[in-house]
Length: 341
Ligand SMILES: [Zn+2]
Image (spheres, rainbow, N blue to C red):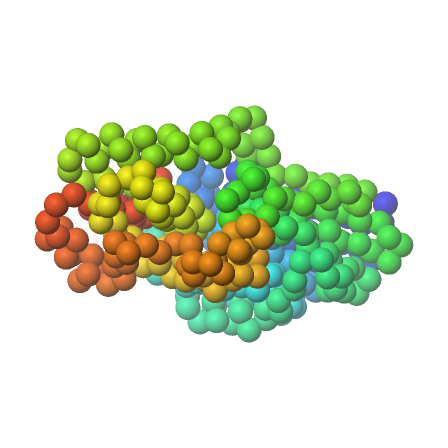
């Protein structure tokens, strides 16, 4: 085989995805994520990359989660000057998420007593190198190496990456794979044409209940909580999870299955991510969801939903009388506005 694949993160443990594919003449990185949570090792995140950054021709990004994009600004700061390829939806989401995380990194750097991993200027410099790439388009991204993206149904814009050399040898990396079927995204696409396939398998040993069952559980839990009175807090990840939650709430209300309790989306990041879902839904949602969008407009809005972008608006939620549902970050119930509710 004339391609060499090296694992520099995201293997043997979760987060920090970073893979290098080398052909006879070109070098391509797939993903450049940051380590998160229990896997966070300061030296591994802040230290130099274990390869010559300046010798890399291109970076291809599977999707916009931080464990796949979180060190891109550092890569550019450290001297990478090739092109960065990703789908248009991933570009919008990744830019937003990286800018958001640069503020968090500034606080973290202060705590660690070192300069931040990157700042807003580094994010801007990184995105000046971005070239968008649609699904199902062959593109030569480095000398002798072509890339082909397929939908993985994980989050909006997510893609598997197949890299092929001049002799036709191919290696494919899936990035994260969606739990299809999703109500919004198309099912993940098979990859039948690679000599070697690297698959994400974080939840590979878990069975998820079918979509219908999960929605019924959510509806019943909300009904019980509403019947008890009081306020309902829903911690949710800003990206994909919040949009799915809004979509299901909107449908349950439209079907008359829940009383009309006011809902607050209390996360500036989630509000902006939802705008990006609205922007790209007609292009990247599954056909049934696209049809729904054409009929109803946004899939994530309903009459008694309030989005609180500013701190001031957020502060007013507590003054609103009666029962309410508050959706806020962070998904793991620490950090974000959920912490103060
Ligand atoms: Zn992911």
